[in-house]
Structures are given as C-alpha cells and as structure tokens.
Amino acid sequence: MDEEYDVIVLGTGLKECILSGLLSVDGLKVLHMDRNDYYGGESTSLNLIQLWKRFRGDDKPPPHLGASRDYNIDMNPKFIMANGNLVRVLIHTDVTKYLSFKAVDGSFVFNKGKVHKVPANDMEALKSPLMGLFEKRRARKFFIYVQNYNESDPKTHEGMDLTRVTTKELIAKYGLDDNTIDFIGHALALHSDDRYLAEPALDTVKRMKLYAESLARFQGGSPYIYPLYGLGELPQAFARLSAVYGGTYMLNKPECKVEFDEEGKVVGVTSEGETAKCKKVVCDPSYLPGKVLETNL
Image 1 (cartoon, rainbow, N blue to C red):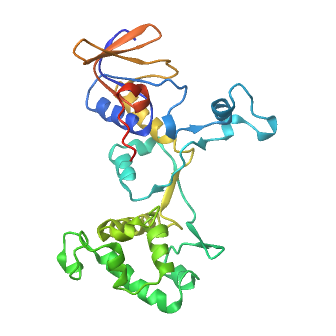
Image 2: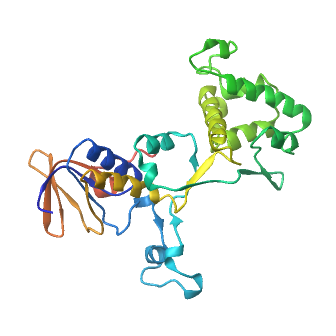
C-alpha cells in the first residue's frame, strides 16, 4: 500500500464506484478502499450473515432461514427506470456485461381500499377501474399532449410555457378529477408529495414521458428493471470496470484516515499503519465527518 496514486477513493457506494471506474478508464492510477468487507456502502445488498452482523452483532441467523448466500437484501431498495439516466450510464460505460437484469412484472397503486395495477397498455387502460369512461377520454387527451410534447418544438406546446404554467394549471385545462390527478402525480410522475402541483409543469411532463418511454423499452408490465442479485451489483460492476483498467481495491480497511499537509492539501490516506500517497481523494461524507456541512435539505 506504500505507493503513490493519482486518486484514492474511499467508500464503495454507487457514486464512488462510478467515479473510480471512469478515472481508471481515463488512465489514472486509482486506489479504492472501504472500511466494510462488502461493496455498496449504504446502498449495498447483504447476505443473511452480513445482515445479522449489521443489526444483531455477533448473533447468528437461525438455521431454518436457509443458506446465507441465497439472500441479497437491499439496504436502500429502489427500482430503476428502464430508460432513465442510470441505465444510459450503464450502457455507455459497457458495465452491462457484468450485470443481469429482470423486468419488474407490474406496478400497482392503492386506491379506495383496493390494490389496482397501473395500466401498461391501451387495453389495460380501458379495463382499469381507476377511472370512469368519460374520465378516461379526458385523460387520454392529456396523455396525448404529454406524449407529443417536445421541449424544443413550440408547435407541441399548445401555447403554454411549462416553465411558467404550474402542474395544477396544466391539468385543470383538461378537467381531470382529483383521483386522476393523484394517479398522474404519484403513480406515473412518481412525486412523493403534492408540492408538484404548485411547481412548473415541465418537470411532471418529463417524468411522465420517462415513465412511458421506460414502459415501451422492454414491452413489460411496468417501466422498472431490477438487478437480478440486488442493487449492490451496480457498484460492483463499476468496481470491475476500474479493476480491468488497473484500479486497486482493498475492502475491510479500518480507519482510512485522510492525511493533510500544513497548507491543508490532501497528501494521502493512512490505514493500519500504512500510508498511501495521492494527489486527490474522493470519498463519501462518512470518511471526513469534520468537513461535512449539513444543509438540512
């Protein structure tokens, strides 16, 4: 470890692993370390033994739960939009060759005490009880507007500037009821609260278009895909990319103390009594708690 590197990366979260991979591809000498014995940081996928160790210390999982390796439990579970930016990054960097994905079979909403499938095509939309017949006609006009909308083509704007018109004002033009608005805002645009209604409509329209594009990409029952062995596979894929281009990885490295010179510039990282010199350090905030500014955002 007593060598000099262009960059030392601390933490194996997705952001850190993407940067490590890209820096290695660019020809830089990279050392990547993590205090944990697994990849992924806060978004890792743990097997059963790792899960028990994290939450129950030295306790062992009961035998009736089966083999530890049969489990990949996400610590920060999320679905991936099939046509989203992350998938574009995966394709552009060619790390998809290290990954296997599965299309998620369906997307569902809870409405009036029942669980309903979010329609994935025209036939499902016609049969769906989420909207009445006349409401479906009004909603269809709105969906056509969203589908045809092109930010760079004013002809598709129908006289509305979506950077100024709020989502509430846009939807009001089509006379949609509250249930449909909730469906659009939370099941399609995936907003977590109702603040979007008072915000410019452009973001909601872009979210709806992404949903539709992702749905069409694999012709599945939902717009989502998921790594076959959990989200922890994503940082590992970029770690492999880094390793292919000469990156060095060290897991289970305690402390990882960042060293500074008298002028406050980074000069290296020390772990277990050894110091690796470097010109730059990239790390997740937990490695430099004294330099983190909390914004409460």
